[in-house]
Length: 518
Image (cartoon, rainbow, N blue to C red):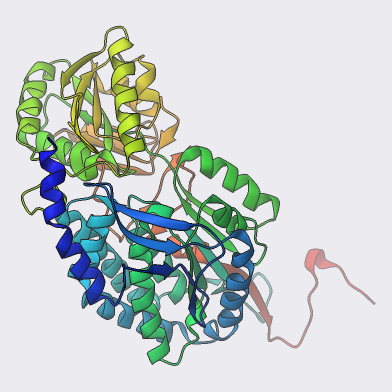
């Protein structure tokens, strides 16, 4: 008997009400293309969105084909020609209005994120809040797209750095953050003066359509060509068409490392720009002087949140040998308190995996751990029912091949270490380089960890988990994570083109290297 699935089915009515409130008729096939002029059906297959808790279809979307992409990109580029001329602070005002419109529907949008992706309600609503937060950031940024003044070596000359809109930005987002990733890119791109073409994950097309309808209303109300923000739902062939389109000036991709490697090469071959946010095989290190209560809470949040399907999920836990046994005991107790169930139930702490294929990945990793010499399952390791699985803890030797790969499931692998140098070496020994965290009270350990001989990740935390990044800092990683940066700091520079401008106001023409033409 599937108790969790049956309970989830009873909550499905709330999800349908959210769709209705946003004007989406899920009883019919929904058009999956918005080209700035109209919503229309694509030439591709019908995409089925399912509730991960029940595997029931909650909506159908008519997908694009590769041949549909060119027309959408051309419409976006045409809209960009006028959008780029609007002063940046005015563009920021449009983004501010988008923020307010999205906020007015935050509960419905959050419910759709949860219902379609599988993350719990707090995470679904929180994801929409991330979109709102980056809009707030972008509004302020619109008045600070500053270049620098550069001293000239020539008298009567003035040098400055100028930043101008880049063009069309293509955004290929992933299923695990079906709203926030687009928001991180779109809000910044729009204030930078770019147009944006969005290709969401095939399994999370409904939330993309809901967001695009709201964004489009804001653009139309302000007399802006709605093609500044367009949408093409589809499978891999649609993504490939966007990647290879020469009119897409920047391609932002969030997804797996193998796909990112191919995309990076394809975009580079046409001299386009690429922003890659790929895999993360993130580690938390706990030193013997750490606050163990804080560390346990952080590990549970980082390893169990979103059922292990965040790119910043903690997948490796490195424990000092002096506190290993005590920490594992506390951690198992904490795992026993995790309430697994329907993501739309307020009491749930961990929902289902996104698709049955993820359950297959989970079971495959468990089987591999059971075959690995020296590895031991300490907690969990079982499929409960349907897409629901037990969050799992396993102890492994540091040489285990299982710690080298990112598996998008809630399996935490624990490795014992003797000193910080060894822990840093273990942390850095994987191909991915997204997020990392150290728990300690020692200033010397902190500065070693954050210094040149410390963590090689793009995100290096102390006494906080690997996930939960703030929008004010640049988000991204090194090595096989791709090297791209989204959100805060100077990530905006990727969405603009830089000009070094020299202005001669002297009335004379001194030539370089002292060359004189008589």
